[in-house]
Length: 163
Image 1: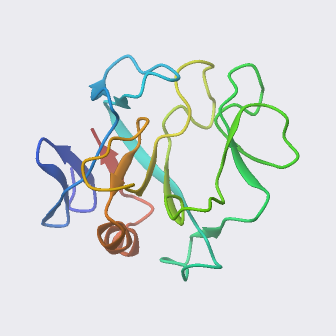
Image 2: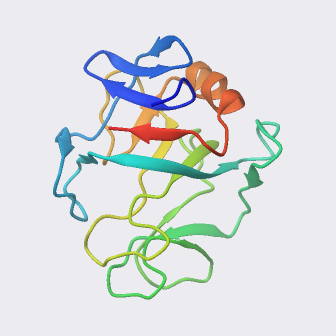
Image 3: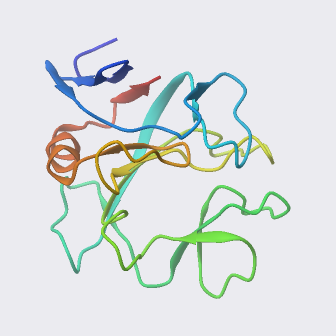
């Protein structure tokens, strides 16, 4: 572990000498992640990218990529694009990245089940904004808006999420 790693503990995430409260998947942490289980997968997950809404916030780091109006994330286990960025029109099951709410204004991407996705092993584990404190995710790790932006600005391409 390094100070640049985000380490999940029972009290929150440790990062660069600070502890940040967070929420995780509704069913807790699992070693046997499956699509739709609402669990956060245990393991060491590399940070592989960052997406942001350029119409709402500035790029938090130079390597962040803008979320466009057509950007989606495929969660259809029957499709070759499963667990990857796709664009509309996409007739299969997906999540819209450009949402009306601020949940995905800033999204940190991990390498969970990526780039060679195993169908059914679970789609993206993002780091994103909480709906509200204590409200669980579908398996992602979520922070308050202020904490998410603070963390994102200091992440490096070598940072990892350790669950």
